[in-house]
Length: 358
Image: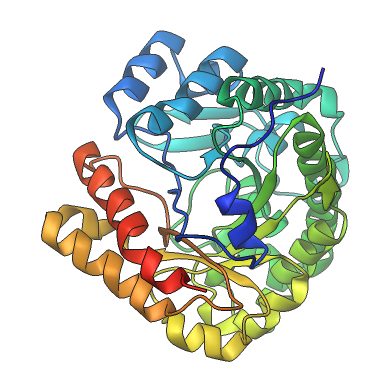
């Protein structure tokens, strides 16, 4: 059965640097704890994994922000850690502490046991993608996503979030061969995982390299970017008669834009430390940009939000041969007032139109 045809393709066209009437906007973690309806659905599901592994719940929370705001994309509700969970590492979300693995990868034996999991273990993700596409009914595109091989490896070795990355970096400096082995397994898994999302209906793919920016120069290129490029190289780039744009986002990676652009993505995400005017000059519109407002602006009041939205759009300037997707430079805070999100979305649409004149 064919999936519904897309009515609003402005996000996809922006990612491919095609002309559009205004700057599209979506927000990282737009389906999340800042929405009371999300909190109610999560309570009903009983746990984060109960939410993520049930296609009806995952579909419901994916669609919730689109009922409130005039966003230009939906993003699959899931987590970047579904991959190591499928590898048998035992993912759990501990209240107030975040994700933790029961069986972190710490020894050479642990590393050698790793293998690309059967994608059937992740079928709940693909089922959710397909259901979301049907329920969207072509309203906006659906973005699929995964973590970068490096970011996933950090969680696998550390066993949870980390302040200093001591365990993964210790392994990287002391036994780089083991880290390369983990990264290769992760890259091959991520290629299959994202391609299955695309086959199920995802119309764009995003790779979150959330922890790429914690590495020294040259090590970022060797241990993160090299494997992100492997993933990008292996992705389906045309499906169902359309290009499938790929976005790569390295948090804290603004100093490496010239390297990141070489990975072959259609768009590069940047955080709020990057000046978009200079970034465009550096890359000469070889790719589209996604970003890059500080999510903490949302606590400064309505006028501050409008001012910062305009500054970001002004910094990007006349779109011309480029492409800009408005977003935060990281995920929305759980404490954000939903009414302020509406202010942001509406301001992006109304203010940006002047920069899209032919």
